[in-house]
Image (cartoon, rainbow, N blue to C red; front, side, top):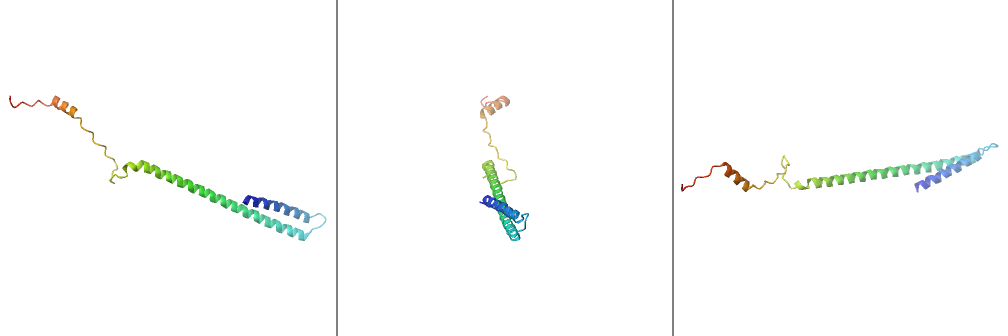
Amino acid sequence: MLLDQMALSQWRMDRALSLELAALDDSHLDQPLLALALRYRTTAERSFYKALAELQRLRAAMHADTLRAQKEREAAAHREMERLCFAPIAGAPQFVSQNVASPRPEPDLDAARAYFEAHLPKPETAAA
């Protein structure tokens, strides 16, 4: 709609220019026609620049909306990444260190028995 308004205003400016040229004919100067042509041109220019300013304002607003939506998407992605990264420790107690204790390994009883049998003296039997 604004582009249509600008195109129509441009056509009117061109038409006003042709009226100005007709008023400035070599044979005589038609002052009432010249005044009318200048008024038409001024009105058309005002309409053209008003539509242009509105178009520029709308484009800037659309650009700002696009940037705001992009920042919102980035913030949502950042929050989701934080949720995924920190979800395993979310319920952990809040100490100075956030190191998660690793589970204690189960003792290898067979290896311990073999070690003790190899390195400790055999107990004396009470009967001997």
